[in-house]
Amino acid sequence: GQQVMQIPQYQHVQEGEDFTTYCNSSTTLSNIQWYKQRPGGHPVFLIQLVKSGEVKKQKRLTFQFGEAKKNSSLHITATQTTDVGTYFCAGWGAQKLVFGQGTRLTINP
Amino acid sequence: DAGVIQSPRHEVTEMGQEVTLRCKPISGHNSLFWYRQTMMRGLELLIYFNNNVPIDDSGMPEDRFSAKMPNASFSTLKIQPSEPRDSAVYFCASSLRQLHSYGYTFGSGTRLTVV
Image 1: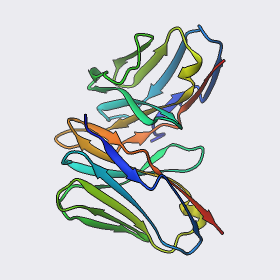
Image 2: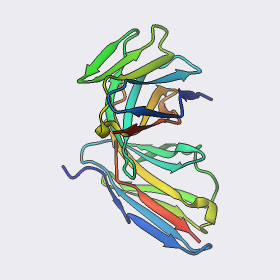
Image 3: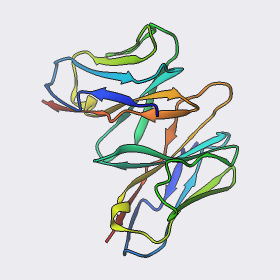
Image 4: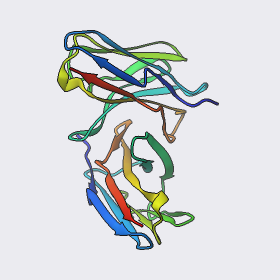
């Protein structure tokens, strides 16, 4: 079945450093979504990418969808302590959303 | 809108007991999803409904798990009998789905502990 792999599993950075998480699918995706889950919280929808090669920005967050629509990345510039949490990608294919395992981001203030 | 509402927030039960988790989706959303989250397995889709009809229950681990959606504003996930390995956080999510998928809105989850 469809699989969505996410790396790295964990990332620890100093506040102010950049952070990137990568997402790869075994199949071509109709779209890809990104979610953030704060410690003890629930996943919160951040954004959806649909078009091949699409790039979207939300303040310090930059999201990319690969040309082949099989991979995606989330880049955070100059991390802040409020960015702490687990970031999930989720690929839409075969009529359902499949979540990656997530990248847990911790930040040293 | 109050968002997706789940109850209870926490549930501690003894092995063998029946557990019922409840979910009220966002009004107007026509898709509802039940997920289970554990450290080992991450977020797993258990079952989802479109317009109150179960579409895919291939993620339901065993016959001990059942889910219903009697109307557009209410769904339940039942585990009978419960086992310690069922301990996890169970999330309900809803979405508006027409021709394309939209972002999911998750509830705050039910943390289930089976002892």
